[in-house]
Length: 137
Image 1 (cartoon, rainbow, N blue to C red):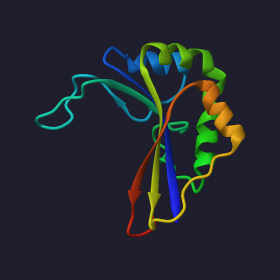
Image 2 (image 1 turned 90 degrees about the horizontal axis):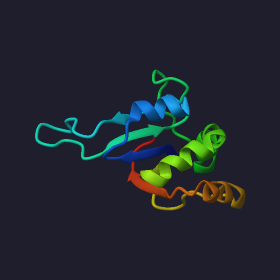
Image 3 (image 1 turned 60 degrees about the vertical axis):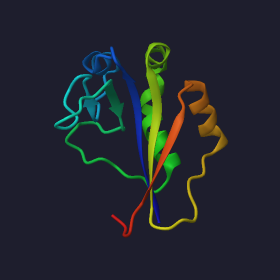
């Protein structure tokens, strides 16, 4: 069995996550500020604003049975703000961060050409991080 998480992330040393939230009018999850403590001995080097399509921060993070469905869900909310997003991608790092959770080593995501075209038009790279699970969530 495979499941996926999807986040659109913007990061940078001088990024102001509160400004991104205000300008995009979307509820982020999570947010980090450069210089905040990461652990007792480390601090974050860069600020981060990320979005996974939740309407409020109180909602549980969603895992998707299909990576395509997760990407489309978040992309549908971001596309109307494409111009603003592209402003940030010119001055900061942006990435589609996708978690791939699997209990076996066969299979993986399939993405349609129409989704790939939309993602390509936005101009943000896609990263898939793979995780092995002994049991299903």
